[in-house]
Length: 170
Length: 469
Image 1 (cartoon, rainbow over the protein chains, first blue to last red):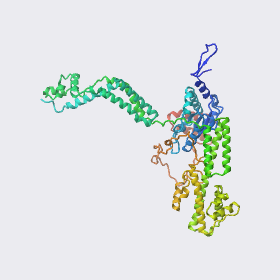
Image 2: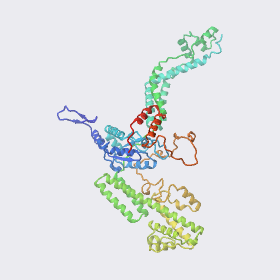
Image 3: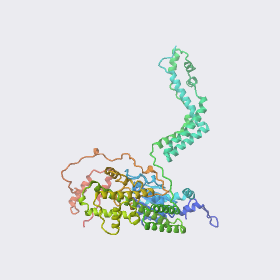
Image 4: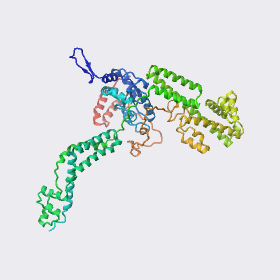
């Protein structure tokens, strides 16, 4: 079993002690039990669906419980072109998600507007939401999304979760 | 004898002095610890601000300026004068005092002047501080490159959902305000109050669980929908009254007054006014217009409602209707439902009304007709305290030109009078025609393809032909 970097494990000790911090344990639980909300807005959503299917199987990383209610999720995957009209709804849904919460911008359109340099398209969802991971591609393959998910898990593991919670409470 | 006229001694000494003084300043900047520290902090700030807060970048000049002032204070006493610079040139270039003499205005003999003119000017300076400056080259270049990169806007900070108790309190306040103004019917308000009680019970038992939060969202949506419906009813009534008033003002088509279409319009108007609260005796008795009260009573009783045939009476009745609707719209404005919805009732002339209608055409359409301001169930998008929308993110702005091809770059192949007709491709032969297939293969080999694609094309055409079914 591979332990996270912040967990200390010494097999030489007789009682098999594990030394760790509370925040590390919390992060370990959080990162392996992400509940994504698929914010499918365009063709990237097809790849997102594919990620959840059996071939790529996002459940290997503990993020298969996709919910369409923001109240029950902690990860928003913005997949597709974000128009200004939809951006307001996306912002509202993000606000309704309970803390702690994370955002993945999937694809070029969600990250930077992509090829749609139009008056109607938001040039990147990070203008209104704090994005944690950007996944490149047009659209990205499911493997790319899974790689983004793994990167997010690494980020969650090392972040000071208690401080983040405290900051959010303020 | 004076020095030759073509030799500009004073400008050479001035330039040498400026270089020397610059060296002194930079040396002090990097050797004086406080100035060095402040300069380093300034450089770091510039980089950080360029990355995080581009709008604060001008503030980074403050520490840099402070370090420069400190260095200036320290090096002021060590600055070279022109005579010292001339002496430095003497020593550096072995002029044997000629430079100092020339600086002092002592006339030099011609051979000496020629020697001075053959001197190496401008002098090549080998400063100690050139070595010291080397580490600063990288950050300075980095800064320059940073200035050239178009940085994205920084992500906003994370928000937090509103606690359930606060949400319940807010919805309760909305309901109380609506109740105070009497805009919504009692049964609807009772339903909302029951929802609040259920929410309170659930919040006490399961504080902040997702289903409770979802129920609060649902109630908020219902309230927004009720408010939106109310506003739409008011707007629709106002439009109907306005259109009826056109008939009354112009006196047009009095003979068609009792047409079926007008009767339908009248019935719809009375129904909407009934929904808005004109369905009880106290409300009707408060009206100043007896005709309208009688018509409304007849409509409520199920009888056919007929408008008065006298234009004067009709005008009076419509004025009463407008007045009553305006009162309702004012109440709605007091509740901050749809700011400016009473504008429908302010305009008096037809021209003003049309201007307002054209100005608001994108904003206030009929319910169900759609529009760019319409969200779910025609409700306005409502936000809580948690949303701090950056207005700049939603501001319309002109984007730079893309790489769209212009018409000048296009090439006209042919102009035909008829629509183009599909012609079979030369290589698209039927599978049964082996001769044609072999021709296609030959043409495929002979086609102009890029070098790196040639192998792929060759492999494709050399594959065995699949058997035809």
